[in-house]
Each structure stands twice: as C-alpha cells, then as structure tokens.
Length: 377
Ligand SMILES: *Cc1c(COP(=O)(O)O)cnc(C)c1O
Image: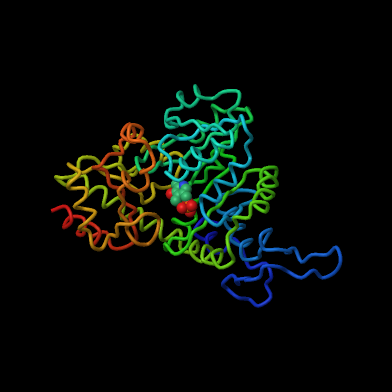
C-alpha cells in the first residue's frame, strides 16, 4: 500500500460494529469488565482508549514501527522518553534543536542527572568524537529548526555500530510522508503531532514510534505511569488530519519551492535556508534519505529593521509560533523559539535579529509571495 493510501486506510475501526467511516470518539474514562479476571482489552483510558489506539496503530503503520504511543504534546512524548535514562547517563543531541527540547534537556534532564551535550550532528566525525562510555542515546532533529541542517541518519547508525546507544530522530518536519527514520536505522521516532500530522493548528499531540518490542514495553509502562496521554477527542482530530497528510505535504512543498526560489531574487533578502534548493549543502543527502524536502525554511534580511517590518506588515501570513498547518506562518526565532538560548550559542548557529522562519502553508503560492513582497517594501 502506498503512503497516501495508508494515511486513509492503514487502520480500520477495530470494533466494526456500525460501519462508521470515521473513527468513533470513545469519550470514556473507564471500561466495564465482562467478569472477574476478564477485560474487553480496555480498562482505563490512561492505559489505552480505542480512539487513541486507532491513531497509534496508524502512526506505527506509516513509520514502519512495531508500536506507536500517542501523547498530549510533542514535549510530553520527549519528556516521557527521557525517563528511559538514569543519573550518570549521557545523551548527545543535535545542536540546532527545537527550543523546547533544549529547555527540557537543560532544566529537567540535567537536574535528574542525565547529561545532555550538544554536537553538530551533521558532522559525523564531531558526533563520533563526542561519544563516551556513558553515552546512552543520540537525539537527532533533521532538517533542523531554523537553520535547515541535515544529519545523515544511516551514517550516524553506522558510527554507532553494535554499541547499545539508542538512535532517536525527531521527524516532525518531514513526517512519515517524506521520511522514515526507522528504515534508516533509528530506534525511536519522535513527532510533534501538533504540526503537519494534525495539520490544522487546532490541537496539540505527540508520538513515539518504536523499532522493537522491548522499547515498546518500557515506554508503554512509562506512558501509563506518567499519564501524559492523548485525549480521545484529540486522537480523533489526529486521525482526521492524517487522512489529508499526503495532499498537504505535496502542496506545502510545492509552495515552499516557489517561495524559496522567489526569495533568493529579492534585493533585501541575503540568504535563504531551504533544503529543497539545489545549492543547499545537504540537497543530495536529503534526496538520498527522504522522499521530499518539506515546507520549512528560514531566510535572512539585509537588516533587523527590514526583518521586523516584514513581521509587522504581512497580512495574509500570520505572525505566530508553531508550523506545519494549512496557513503560512512567520516567526522571529531570536525572540520566540530561541529566546531561551544564550546569545553566544545563538549567534554561533546563525540565529540573529535578521533571521525569519517561514512555515509555508497550502494557500496559492502567488498570494504568499505577494504578501511578502508588500511587507518588504
Ligand atoms: C513543536 C515541536 C516539538 C514540541 O512539540 P509540542 O507538540 O509543541 O509539544 C518538538 N520537536 C519539534 C521539531 C517541534 O517543531
């Protein structure tokens, strides 16, 4: 089954009792037992709920995992995942990481005795040199936010070899429609379902997709114990959103290509970071490990004044955090997503007050460009 078909048909309602095409919302906290020592398969919705189970099976099918777990947000998924580690353990993470993940690692994981160190994972030699006897996991985001750096996932896997180091990939930006990290050697795939999977900026969600039964068992225990699960209604919204994932990803990418090409030709734009541009340093690598480039980009203006003018003057494009929805959104990483990152570290990564990030939506590309053009004047 092709991925666009799988998005719609990979999982059918397990109950099959009414023939409903849409997954029913089982808004029930608990489920009655048929008798002593018996269960319908559902006992209490923190442990499992049929609506959540449906979207979990769907994600597992799309990513090619043995199991997928749905959480109340991407951060809930990552925070639960970090409970796999114990004091003294080390985790290596991509340096150009989602700001919320950095905040979690620096303020909570470190406090719990798990040392998270940041490396430029797009440089395999640097990553390899940073591994120690205590390294228990490598946490990769690719392409990164906002600088669009790409890590060679199977290259990292080769370096890890047979060592017992988990390879974790945050696949939020490409989604299973464009990339399947498990097939490239990852053990865990992380998603903020809030973004492309839900696709409509109307709910938060997170997922962990797992390569092995052993990981599934450990994380099911942690999910049930910690309890940051996806609610039945939100699980319904995710299943509904994923039905159009293929169409939305295709259109967002097509628009992103047009907008990036157009941006390059604008007199006040200095640099455009989009993996789909043939001159992007990781263009060839992206083509090898993914089926597409996605709809995320960043670009630098000639001055902070022009950057702020763009933020203030776009009308169609909304100045809002988040990404991956039907509407085009623009953000200012320096004061938003990366406000918590100390200035020297921020500047080292190229995140300055001239940089804007664009999540290209599925409107007409002409309207997106016309809005940017007016705002840049
Ligand atoms: C948004 C995001 C997260 C966090 O997800 P939430 O659903 O906002 O908690 C994690 N990783 C990436 C790449 C993201 O964009």
